[in-house]
Image (cartoon, rainbow, N blue to C red; front, side):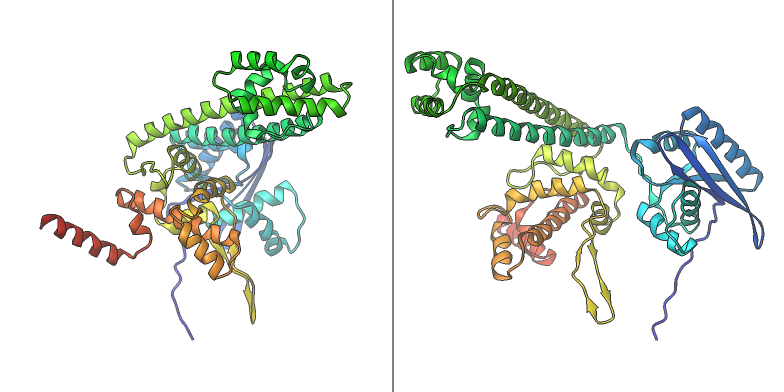
Length: 438
């Protein structure tokens, strides 16, 4: 028999936990104060989700807690995005403690507490309070102004990028209807040649062939210096082929629709470039406060991706070890085992999905044949016959370990350290020092 000790956390600071179920317009509150050994005084209330109402209620709870012998309040709720902003901001302003509970924990606790899955706001508030009493809570992290701005901009950048990709798809679909024989690269549409073609002809092949090739070439060269003759000839030839076998009844309508989507693309490109510059500026300001943040390095990570990664993780100093960081991002493993059954071990994916996407964008270029992780990536994928997604997750965790290690050690990036153990690396460095001295 294996015997171990388990430490039970005691509320030695005499904190009164208040469970709050948050919705867009109201807050359901539940908390309990002990009366005797086997009796509790239960408080339930419903208040409006407005700053004035919340401040009034919290002040009442503070005075009640002090009269019952408690030193402070801990406001506990589920992470509901903007709906909990008023509550948590006001609690912080009044110097109350704050914490989150997992929505999944609240859902599963209903089976334990009530032997059912019925849902109503009073039940949720009671479950939140029960979890808080057992200290099954998550840390409510507060950020500095720079980190707050960086996270907001990163979220906005993701929205702009999705809208940009959608607009590009619409451009390509509409162009296929308007100009079915277009054969140049799609990337040409957004280069200087494509923008000149849009300004002069709106990508309408009937307008392109309305005059002879000499006029088309002169006009294009006026708006786009240095364009290749072979490119212009290919464009004109494609326009002639499209006009030959199609009617122009819907050409003006398709041109107008294509113009809307193309303008959205151009605005998306400009907005993305502006957001990148702004996020890099904020990162430089953060570095003034924390010089341990790794520097950008070619073939490892760019300055912009450092800004995106920190926007999702927040200050790396908040994490005591790598395990906490991987769990926060949802890169920790989830096991499935019961008796003789052994299920697959998968990623939990309970953390920030956008952080995992940023990590994949950083790691993907590093897995090409001649890149940093290329040889190892393709060796594992081919020799061990592993799926690409699984191998990618392995190297995402490896990259995160390297990035966090650089931050904790306050050392510059050295690619040799990624593939050897610490003892071999220190021995290699000592040999290099001796050779330099000799």
